[in-house]
Length: 455
Image (cartoon, rainbow, N blue to C red):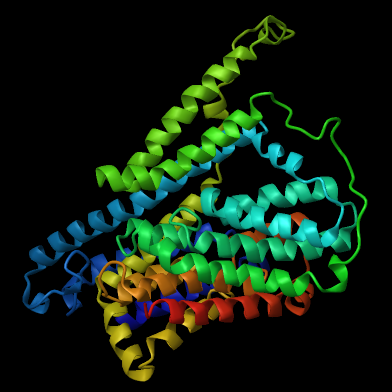
């Protein structure tokens, strides 16, 4: 029975990894794999000899001797436990995504374009890298990449030049997301899962993450694609945001997201509660600013119908959220939870520690692996494999490796995939020109982390 479960998980994982080749959205195998795995667990519950208690972080003694009724009752409790933990992450992400979409509704991100005045390629590279690093720590690396490449397309006309800038933006965005609890899905998982705290995460990862981006950007700044000056193309009349409330909503939205870790520290409530409060505050201002734009001439359409005269920016933003991504996270996290519940991850970790005693090597391999396969299930699996207490250095290193390791391949991170789509970046072009820069930054950042944790 355990063998069948492992086979199904591997097949589902392969389908997720090969989604572009199969032309099948990865949420489909993720959801299917999750449902099938839990169904097999339910049908074969009487045949399993191990059960992992996620709350106690240990195998339950004497599980094999439990009655069928006791095992099914434990199954229901475990399923609800994992559903609750997964829901915490999903509602947190939904709130953050909605705030970002509300900012975009008012064209707030166009404000950043006003900061970019130089025509010097090297200076422009550092500006974009800095913006990607800072912005990804607040609104996550995926959104930061979308925003900056959109701005990039408006100011740089040459396709080849943009490819180089986009590649370095991916590295900077992934590095920026690693040291912030809200900067990357995997880091958020570790934070909400009570593996790391905001203070220690920043303390131990800010310098490695900085080195992870500074070193590649410094090397790239001396390369030919970033020499000389370029002609800045202006696609907008004034270069500023379309809405006069854009800058206000940008600063309000970013402040609201930054407030979430502060709210958690003060109240000790789960992060999604603070995110919902932030969303409510941003939503209030969005509705107020939207109503001031209300026009009678727009309120009545050609048929005299005024039912669409006012469109809520919150409703509009909610309709633009990427639900396939949310459902994918749900499917993969619950699928990994099935393996964890049967004790497979715990037992596998014990065998791995015997095979590779050096934990640092294991975690760096995890970083390299995240460049090939999705880092969400890798981190989810590591959370079930390792039982170290909160803020143990192993969790910080996992956050760093999983967050920055994906930069080594264009398909290794959500930021890379979206950049690939927006700029039509060729896999082998990235591998030839950008991958080695990402690898150098990753290794130097990892070495610096190993040095910093000694103090």
